[in-house]
Image 1: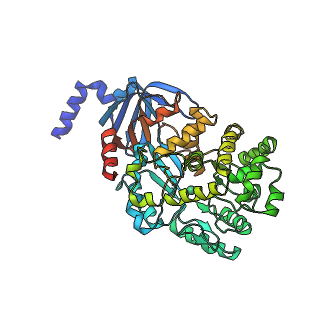
Image 2: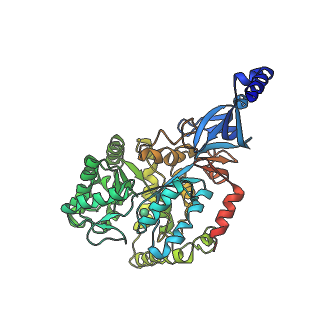
Image 3: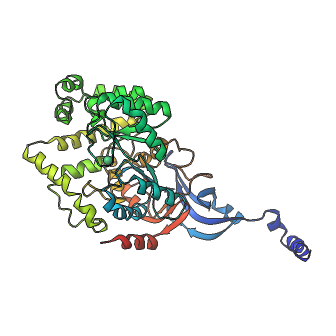
Length: 465
Ligand SMILES: [Zn+2]
């Protein structure tokens, strides 16, 4: 009674305040320039209110009086944009490297990568456990989408893969992926036949599962697209379809050995038709340019002083040896395929993007993929896309817009708007003008959790060797 009376008195005294009581939120970001990646617009003088893991309001700074918050960040002269998505990473290397893979999680956050798409490995239970713990806030790391084990043929190239020898094995393979509650299906061409490749796509389509991956070189990506293929990893398979000699080369030698001639006979006009079809069917292509460049130069670049190498455990560094040996064998045999791939890939990016093919930024970082570092390598990939002719805004789209779009999550991610996930970056400079400015992260917010520079530095320091 007494309290009510007191409240009523206060209301009379503070009439206007009571008329419009302040909304309490967890965080207010003030004076920010909000970057809209979709339109390329820059909106200065904004305030962003965040409650829990969700953006609640984005208003002109004058309206910030409507809110109170437990924490306030003044982002004067700073830029706010959605967190980055790395659409091709790997957690793998066997049970002895589980802890060392887990140590990679802070590296992603430190570089502003708030979501990763794990493209298959052999420590699925651990990855699923991290996915759940990150979602519930128990573990610091980027949100994880995972394919779980890869689907490969009877002699899989990678440990942990599910063997799908014939069409009859497909239902059980997809059942087990569904039981694991993976986010999509990743195929691999260690020994997958083209019949099984097509069969998996068709069966997954019926179950409403997304498919992407490598393709057996005996297959035709456009036939896969007709059956419902949702994505293609790396550029080999799209490139193959852009050569008029693809069919005849496939009949003679259906392997990567044909790539030399595929590249030599690449036809830009045929490519336009291929791109049109990929666009119409919304097939997401992940070019992985940075790893292509890194591997093509691996024997000629000294990586011993790479700034991120000290954050990679010795166990993970040991897995780097395989690619180096492979490159030595290729050089000894006189193969220049990787170098030619690298050149042709750069040439394809701009026409593919301009045709409307949804490209996705993916680094392919993780064990075995030498010197492609978690977090930092996504920036290398975006810079490579710009080197290939995309504007910085277009390159950023391949990460923050096309990433969520692959999973049909456009309504929850991709912009700084009310109702969307509070995954965002506060940057010191404008990355729309220069893609390298994207590295100058001042704050990272992941699901509303604030990571300031000091905290990110501490998290990285904890995993330094
Ligand atoms: Zn990969």
